[in-house]
Length: 433
Length: 191
Image (cartoon, rainbow over the protein chains, first blue to last red):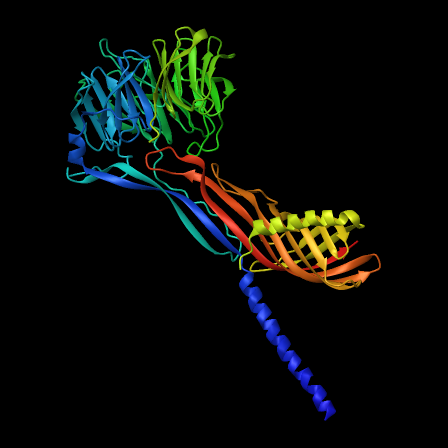
């Protein structure tokens, strides 16, 4: 009996212990959870569309709007034309550079580049080349449209006129919050969008052509250049030629394949200097309808606008997302022989973008490191004349003693008539709203 | 129930101050702990090693500890430690509480292209548990089991593509907060 009584508790204890262990296990399981909370910062872009007919009918001077995302700058007489990326062109009366006046805006959705000859403004509108009469820049009118000449633009030529095209985007910032359990360390994958990353500013400089023809002046990061009665445009791999002998009625001549990753075009005298991610090409314009390659130089893969004078070519190389892991430097080439340019010297830079030449002064937009002005009398020993810091610079046009600088925060103008006393004249601020 | 980390740290700090004040009329004795163990949780189990140094007053101990915690994301927790022996005997059960900051060992993560980066920021660290101390003359072996939490923040920077704009590099695209909850089993040497 006594043995049985003693045995009873020993049979109950294991059950209690098991229950206790089970409860403990359940408690532990509910507490022991690895989790995460993720917050993604998303910007939503919603397209705004209009029919092609509407877009064409609205290509007039509208009320001035604030600069928001300026890229190309172009000088046409006393007027400053500033491209509002993919939206249109600001018209600025720059008669007095100390007090520029924003007089209006020409709606050209999809516009990236422009060039002028006499009173004709040539601008791309998606796949089309528009010729806009700016005899009176305050009353522009579209005189001619050539369809489907820029086939690298995504999509097809809109046709008929009631087809809707994207003219703008509404932007909204938002957050996406997610949470969950961590099962195992997550592999990290990066996906890259293949959407366009439009190239910056640009234009044509160094007027050269029949007497009487007046070409506008643009920056170094141009993809349009006008000289010798021709408009030259570059795209990713080709050079297109338009005959603009009749200002308001350009004619498409041809497009020739010239390489890959072409970015900028710079006209000087009888030549075109073309910058690509891989190098620089020099073309002659003996026959302007069929430019002929004289030479090419290759460099590490970087973005590289180029400017030139009679004896030298100046190339800035920049790395970046689109520009690959190249270098940040200025390269100086001797172009005494255009068929055999020789690299003379390299100068380290921070993040060089556009550049401009005026006499013995070389202006370099060094990105976040501001604007640098060098004396190039001795190209093997450039002397820094002025370093303007505190602005994030993209492109520059030095012309007649006034340097017009396109920056992230606006368009700045500097008086450089006295290189030892370069001073600010005015600023057209970019609107933050 | 979710433990409020700030309150936990506040209580521990207050307790440490009280401990120092109480100790003014009593003999304080230096004590060090070296612990090694395993944290068990959802993810791959790994090791943790820690060392704690402080002072003992009767059945109380307060100190500062640091260590290596290799669970999920290798980290270096730095914490305040308070423990209380239940009995006045040599070998005795005890309870303990830790609270501090969890510093991630690798503060920058690997990314695969330029314009992208990943940074890890410190998070909270706390542990609550109980154990048994086996007395060995002037030293002791401690066996513990506790509920342990460590957290950290991961910030992913990348390239933001926008229609008709230059791509923007190193933009903060995502913030991730990691909460890692484990049961830790440790064996320690007290000297």
